[in-house]
Length: 87
View 1 (cartoon, rainbow, N blue to C red):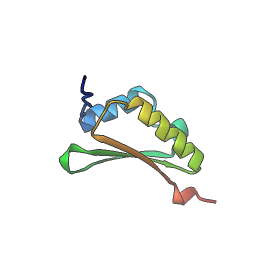
View 2: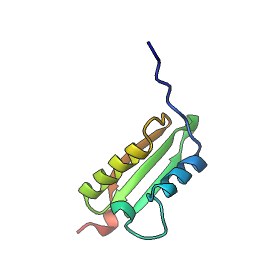
View 3: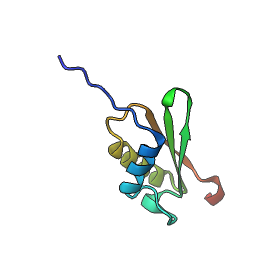
View 4: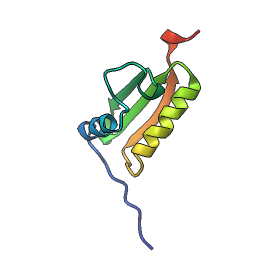
């Protein structure tokens, strides 16, 4: 039986991957998210949060992030609504 080993990446590598996949850019609304926030936590865990006006847009962004970061074990991804843009 083969053990699956997940990769750990640095915050610099995470930013590089997100920029390379168009998930972080200077323009508002990139891939349906208002903001992508990254928090470095204890133990090398990186939390990525997609902030979006619409829950559906946040879910799309999370799905894309999970696809881009498949196999990375030290990154957690979630979405939250943008309270500043709530109707």
